[in-house]
Length: 160
Image (cartoon, rainbow, N blue to C red):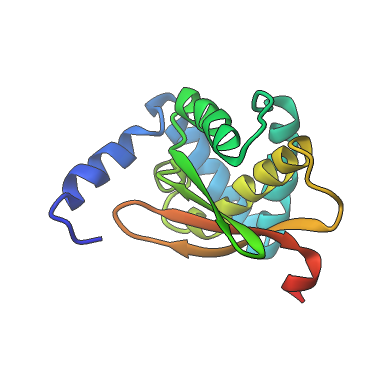
């Protein structure tokens, strides 16, 4: 993202993780990396995300726009960025921007921290009424001034 705002965006992204948590989260990320493979960390983060998604659920929503607003109300309260939901024919695209994971877990954590969001969103979509045949999968991380995590909610047959 080269819009001339790179340093400003980097500054604001750094502010998303409270200083009181940085030493702990950095040490946690380092310890996880020493004790587990990236795949194992992702699995752990996914399960943790599902637990968080069950503990804090968005308010009831009737429309996709309502669901997006409900999720963003939580993210705003947590300073965890923002999400956009986009209906793309056979699936729903979920784009989460500005999550505080780089500041919290360091560079390496960016690769596995999206699994935390995947777990949260999976649980929330179940709450919103997604059936057993619909699954949410992370499809991309767009790293840059603003890290963007992309997910797809679709019928399980579309994921092979």
